Image 1 (tube, helix red, strand yellow):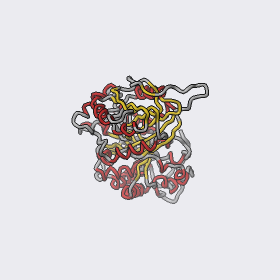
Image 2: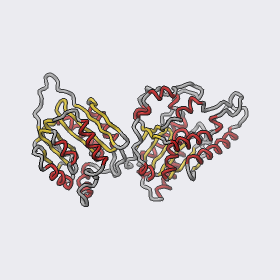
Image 3: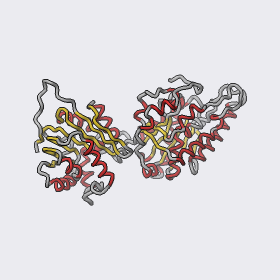
Image 4: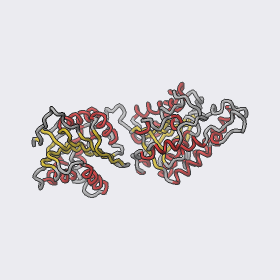
Length: 472
């Protein structure tokens, strides 16, 4: 456990600002996705919710999302040496402050007090889990599926025993139930070094002026924490300005665990792809508006511009769908092979590529199936999350064997949750970097998609170049 007190100077907000924190990628949940979910916000003590997730809660209020708050303790131990206020008196004060803060954050606050002892949540994880299961069951009874219920809890490595116990309990329930999890740090900002690697995988929720105003008013409602109880020793302010500065940013930061199918046995895998996507293409020849949407046109342009080579000898596209990207990739390749698990999608791709003599299509379900030959360009776009994790690992093994030394692997994926599938875009790219360990030759990331270029190592001096070209 980290040792610190609220009186420590800690890491300054200037240091955090200089660390690149504001450049973290945005949380990949747009207004519609937020509005369509229900959130269970957990607070170990009154004020945790306002500090760590007040802006998020204000945003959810404006979007009309369902929000339930579970308060574990009254925070009665915040001033153990107070000469003026007993723990019982402080508990009453802090509960009243909590209600006032929620009035600034939620239109009709729905909150429940678990009456657990301040400072001893580690001994009450079973009680916390039971309360969470009750809250989840109530939402499920209203017809909400597990993946549309998100838990919001203190960061499980926050350094405060209560925060860590609550975060760990929430992580257990979220993982077992297939729910999303947003973890908000509080004391981490005080004791952690800005050079710490942990926060660099987190996500940022930008706050607009209305969100920031609501959060500021909620924080100010916790008078017993932001002002001294009196001028006597033991009644000092618990949240001095150098601590509050971390929560006055124009964004909030969360560790995000996307919802996954409970136990994963109900998730789709590569073997399901043909049936799933043939059905998708049954009623329309362009179900994702590849040819008309600005998102798709913009993504294709960025993908093509990010490729480090103007021309390639042999290109392979995994998951070509109806061939809109394929038609442009093929024009930069001596030979080009587009593969897809959906025969219905591939029929459209074949027609689209018919005028390009270098281009061919094949009906393959990767990674179980794989074309012969080697390539200096492999493109995996919007397909990695349609594989189970072990299948994705096999895919990258296949790519590593098939890509020529110095060849290009282009990855591009939607960053929002994918219903029915275990992985998402961020996890696909993280797996590629971890497994391949290749040089990163380009990275573009916004709230909607992630585009990354990896380059295979060059051949060693005793390794002759391999023959190129697919067997069609």
